[in-house]
Image (cartoon, rainbow, N blue to C red; front, side):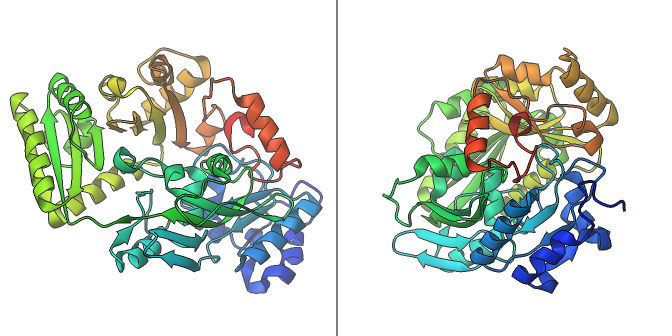
Length: 452
């Protein structure tokens, strides 16, 4: 591995940070390429220069000291948790140090009666989920890689899925955050009670900021009680009929906690039948779940759709397989895209791709472009503004008041295209915010919209 191109010898960063976190918590990456590969660091940065080291602070105070040292030396920092979503977003540029919060992972407070919880950013979602289940409560998020994803990483990437149908996005669950500024100072926003709205805008800013404004160290969430019963209804069949069923469900008084439209290939790959799919999950008291599930089946029957109800382990397994299929492509060349369109345009978009999922009410979803030709078309089309079936997909979403963002793609593809595809007028404001929070541009440089 070549020496770093900024005139600092390999290992200088690690040596300077060892006194803060301890020798065992500052690893020189040029001596441990396997760790860099395991963390997915090479998929997150511009090729040609491996960061000097990865450091693992154990406390919020250590994290602050690490960032302060980086700021003093103008070292560029790539923050992460477990690294499960480092490959999302743009390629970071000129990174000197990777800072992982996964060892800052304590439970600070679980106020069972107030339905709130405060945890450090490095706690795994799966661990928090298990802790809350002991009190018959849950956090209304369903992130990618729930076994490995950390709380801080979930907030930093705004990562949640189908549960937004009932509970909203990550920012809707946040009551407070603590973060380390780019200069190493610790700051807070919000509080630990549901009625506290102080700092609400700041929490919205940090949600989905990809570590460009500060490093999240602690989070407070609102919680919900676990429901008595759960069931999922799947309707499959012709495009027009599924579209009508979706319109009926959106306009009804039914209250699914999760509801998605599924592309034909996703339906078939999960063994759910043929044609387009509509999947809706209900959780409440047993009588309500049965009534609502049967009403969805009746809607499907009137439209000649095939309907099935899943309960218990079959239901849990179905949602697990759905998440795995949409988030973990079988080919390395796959491009995974996050899209947003008007909900009424979801069926049209899904009919143009092989594998995809769009949430029924929000119009947000995920698409996969699976084979080499599709990837090349996506790359060339996005670069030139072409109108072919895949290269023009971003144009199609924009025509429906939407967007298309590339989450994951081969590094060679990300180097050639604008992964965010932002066309709004907010970029000057975003840059001013970045300047205010991180004037030296040391945090996740180049990972966000417009190269921020």
